Structures are given as structure tokens and as C-alpha cells.
Picture (spheres, rainbow over the protein chains, first blue to last red):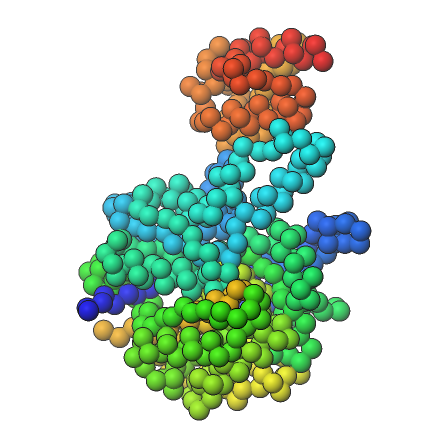
Length: 418
Length: 83
């Protein structure tokens, strides 16, 4: 069966350490993390406000939204709109004159609605839990398609929109969904990626804390997220968003688009084993199958982005899987982005990919930072630690993104060559 | 409470829920929706804020009474004064 080649032609993003690809990439190369302590309801002693480390985005939401839109909508919607608008601008598409019914919006989310429901329960707690004070905005804010739907309302896109719930593999899943819809001919232009507003939900933090997976550091918020370091002790929850424009190659070429990369392989599979503990065997299988779809050997991959979230077990499990697939590949380098920006949940996969995409041009691999004492169980030979690494050429990137309930995803991108 | 004061309360609520709108020149006799970009959800917001901030209940059958600033004050002033 002939399958169209699918390419990336634009990207818009907001991460804790950058509101454009340029700023974000520069900070990844310069080793600039940006995690801060924020106030969080109920996370202090006896239900008081406490402080937790978090990655917070500082984009200007009013750049693309009215104040009323901001009041009515959600933070996830706002992040999604910012990233989508920036992606459209980056793509160079003549958006105003483009047939909006032929554009699809596919946004990955880890979860959505926790923030809004928690806020409303808190709100009615001030009124003796009388539900007549419960906002009529609650349901449109919490429907699962909210972030994708807010993009369509803001932009006037009338093609399909929905979110893809895929835990922390959601960013990759959004891109895969868009690729499939483009190949099916359902749409001609796609906005795809992932978003997260999770830092506004105390429940996310409390859940990780109860699980023993919420990261801490005695003195420095920027060192809480330290994948592969021997002293790592958990996740930093962050917000963020990253949305790409995807097109069939022939359409992109016809309009003279700048092609950033081609998606040549992908795979999503399931551990079918545990709610939270990753399964290296299935992760390795996922990467192998993605390589098979791409029709390449493991040794042809130049960069493997790890999902590693800085949990004691999860990082080891993923490194076992990577060793199984790439153990004999001397020119395959391994890195990680969460050491700078924490875990952006639904946006993680898409943002981490964006951090590596410029390597196709500059042949520099950004490192993972905060590794002061490398855990021997994570010590793969080609792990790029603390300093960027210049190589002869970067032509293929494999982007891992895994999530709870045992969802694994691997996406393979190639430097575009006609 | 005077009708002017009640109108100011409604304007304050509109400023809060529709912060992009210019409320300085609102004509009291003209429907609010003919002067500003307000939708049905915004009117529910006005009802909610009257309830939350002032303890005033507006039953659904009376929503049309909130059509203009003047009709708001005609309808709401006795309610404020009965509190």
C-alpha cells in the first residue's frame, strides 16, 4: 500500500525554559533549567498551603487570546492556543486563506479536568458545599476535548478536533494520530502535539507524593529533576505545550514549506503488566517495532531521547530497554530533557522532540544535566551528560515517551532529504 | 440602595466577567447584548456573581429582566432593598 510521506513544517511551544524553539534550544545547550517552588493548596502540614517544585511557563497568553477567552477557558486551552498559533506562524502557511475545514487538531493529554474540578470543589467549599455556586463553565472546561476545542474556537478551524488521552506518552500519540489522519486523507493539514496544565492540580502532586515519586532536593529546585543521578528521588511536575504542523510531503513541497523533519517510523504498544511500573521488555519491543516501521537498523539512529522522569526505578527500566536495543550502536547517543524542564506530562513527548530537532541542522546533541553521580545502573556509554556533544551528522532521532497503565510510544524522525 | 447604585453593581460585574468590553458608555435603556459582545454564558455569570457577591437570587424565568441596565435596576433594586 502506498503511504504518503509525512513531514513537520512548523512548531510552536511553551516550556518552563522557553517560549519559542530558539529560546528553548539555546537553554538546552547552555544548561539552563528553570524549575521553581510554587504554592500548592493542601500540600503543607495539615492541609495548609505548601510548596512544591514545578515547571511554570511564562508565555504571554494575551498574545493570542482576549481577556474574556482567558477567563472562560482553561490553562490547558490557553497553552494549546499559544502553541498552535505559534506553530501556524512558524509553518508559513497562508492560514487566513486556507480551507479551515481541511485542518485537523490532535492534541495529546495526560489528563484533563482535574484542575477545573478541584477548583470548583474548593470554590463551593466557601459556600458550605452548596452546588448552586458550582460554575456553569465546569462542563465545557472539563470535557476531554477541551484543549483541542479551544484551539478551534480561537482559530476558526472547522475540521476535526479531539484530544488523545495517552498518559505521558500523549505528545507522541498526538503526532501519530495526525500522521494517520493525513495518510487517510481525512485532513490536509494537521496541528498535533501535546499540552499539560497539571501544575494547577494539587491531586497530581499529592498522588505522586503518596506514590513516593514526587522529587525533592534540599536546596535547589533546578536540581530536583535529575534523571540517571544516583540520588534522584522523583518527578518534577511541569506545565507546557508543544504543537507541530504536519503535512503530506507533496503538499508541503507544493507550497514551498520549510521542512523540518520527516516522520519515518512510530509505534505504540502496551505493557499489559502493571499500573505504574514500566516494563523494559515491552519498551524495547516498542522501539524495535518503530525501527521496523521506519525500515532502519538501530545503529542508524543518532539520538535517542529518553522518557526518564528521575524516578529510582523508571530510569533503570528504560535504560535496560535502551541497552537491549542500542547496546551495540557506538554512534547512537542518548539524552534527556526532563532534567531542565521537569515532566511536562501530556506535552513531554512533543516538547522533548522539539528540543532535539535542531540537531538536524547544528549536529549538536544537548546533554542531560544534573548528573553529579551517575547511577551505574543507568550508565550507558553514549549517555550525553552535562555538556553538549558535537557529532559529524545527526540524521535520525528516536523519541521515547512512556506512560502509566503501561503505554509505550516511540517516534522516529529523519532529517529531510528529498 | 438607589437604582444608580444597583446599575453600578451590574457594571462592576460585567467589567469582571467581560474584561475586554468598554462599559463606560452603556446606554441604560438599550439591551446589553446590542451594545456588547455578551453571550448566554455571560448572563449566567451575571446571575452567579449576583448570588455569590450579593446573595441575590434571579430565578430562570426572570432572566429576561436582566436584558438592559435599566431593566436590571428596575428588577434588582427592590431585591437589594429587601435584603
